[in-house]
Amino acid sequence: MRTTFIESLSQAASENPDIWLLCGDLGYSVLEPFAAKFPDRYVNVGVAEQNMAGVAAGIALSGKTVFIYSIGNFPTLRCLEQLRNDVCYHGADVKVVAVGAGYAYGSQGYTHHALEDAGIMSMLPGMEVFVPCDPMEVRAATRLIATSGKPSYLRLSRAGEPNLATIATDLRKPRILREGREIVILACGPIASRALEAAGELAGRGRDVGVVSVSCLKPLDEMAIRGVVRDASLIVTLEEHILRAGLFSLVAGAFAGDAVRPPITGIGIPEQGGKTSLAGSRDALLDAAGLSAQAIVARIEQSLARR
Amino acid sequence: MADILAVLYARILRVDPADPQAASRDRFVLSKGHAAAIMYATLAECGFFSPAELDTYCRDGSIFTGHISHAVPGIEVSTGSLGHGLPIAIGMALAARMEGAGSRVFCLLSDGECDEGSNWEGILFAPHHKLGNLCVIVDFNKIQSFGSVAEVLNLDPFAEKWKAFGWQVEEIDGHDLIALERALSGVPAASGWPTVVIAHTVKGKGVSFMENNLEWHYRSPSDELLAQALTEIGA
Image (cartoon, rainbow over all chains, first blue to last red):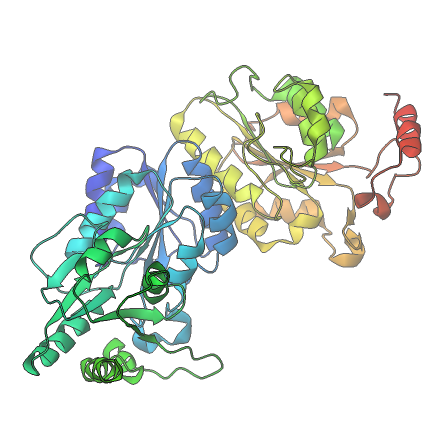
């Protein structure tokens, strides 16, 4: 995903001389192609995210489009107030790009797990939020935000993620990864691959399960989501994020006013305040958090039994 | 601070009230956004809007909020939470250097806000990038919210800190208009380094009952005290 991002950004920057990239001294072996091609528009600001966000706002307020890049919590939570005041309040054309979504930096430990970022970014006024599930969506998202003129958050995983479907759609719309109508799993990010696994398992048990990637969390295209779940008797949301202010909250909020609607089961990372995080690969940590394909299947079966 | 703004807007800044968004303008970022009243009054004096509009200050529905707002013509950025202005000014200076139109960027900090770590991130950054078109002015009145700067969180040796970070340091009497004009006219510095003007000021300067009195960081004067203050400063 990181490589796809930098390739797409370099392409956009070769077409638009106003695109800048700032990084917080992270992105070694990823950002070099951009830095080599556009040395005047690339700044490693050092390990100083508050300054990075403010500098980005200042450049953007001078008529430029500025990408800031770092790991998970650093370009988001560390400089949250700069994003709120300097970027969003001024409508500055700044794109926050974080790598290491969820447990992507698994064994690096708690500080490198980004579990609340998408929700917190969604709360910022005027911030658009994109959580692509595969390189194809990363390419589309990078192109989209490079020209949107709006503050944006792009949440990337790490490296080696496969494309989950061959067909790309308008990134702002839900993208169908697997057709199916009885149960529809709405997923954001590469965790969608586990939704596909779970759907395959449920299909083997005679269930009709669809999987949809919702990569644009904000603005959420509620109308289009209503379209993909119109025949569903159960809606499931799946995210590599806590179940607050992310995909589950946004979808549940969208349907909350409906007098009649299918139940919505939210599957995400449990909150673990005060508990020590153990080392583990992304896969191991997801399994431990109850997000193995088998555990997802079991949660869905439970929800179906409760209907 | 009024003296600093008077010199900036009368003699230094290339800004045009008739075209406040001109691309080649100098930028002024007021980082101590709580000093909104002085800022608004200065802009009104310069013709960015009618002085009559100042009467709406902090009233319901007014654009003149208690911390400066970019809704007001002539204000580049809204500030109020401290430690935000300098990084933004640095970004503007980087962009201006790239544009090559000769724009300079001035940023006014309070002394108390130099407690904020984000400022020191910026203070480290600007000389590294040799941002000679950037000038920071510190309104060094030695008083912050709870008491003196020396008591709350001592900044001394202040000038030496800036020097050690690589800034061109000018230390002046912040009420000496000639000294202010001389120091600010030196931007961009021939040395190529960013400039900091440490302006030693007296909080409430010229009003006997306000000078160096922490209470007047918070209070608004009664009509009677206002009249006395205006008489004392010869307004």
